[in-house]
Length: 127
Image 1: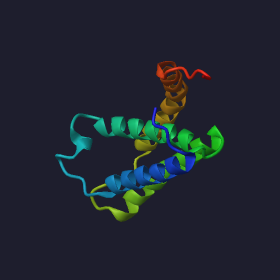
Image 2 (image 1 turned 60 degrees about the horizontal axis):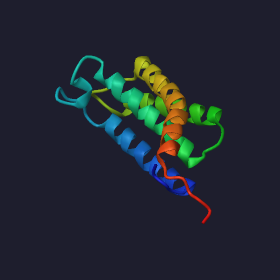
Image 3 (image 1 turned 90 degrees about the vertical axis):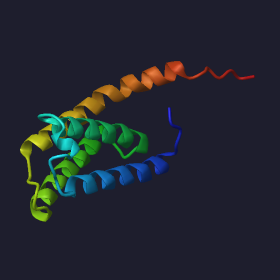
Image 4 (image 1 turned 90 degrees about the horizontal axis):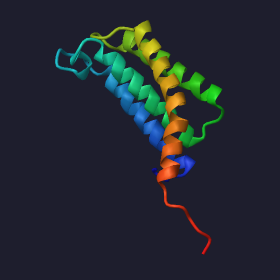
């Protein structure tokens, strides 16, 4: 597992969130990843918000409830920004739903991934 301080995780999370926002606000064209197959944008939303959850737990931002609330506020903020600041995109409740499913997936997967990672790390002996 990547061994960073919570502060470093916070910075990394901020960079990833900013990058995701920039990606969401760029002009949309027919060759964009969102158009690779039907509903591919929902897959990206789900995976991105699952990643944000995982990173948020590493950043130790507070309780799980507040992390979920913050991520969902970010999801809604992205959709509002798309509606207000882009000509080729619009707000989508389905995208927010996919983001929410991504948060739930992240909450489900994170402890399982942590358990796998802890089993793979060599045991430290007090020698």
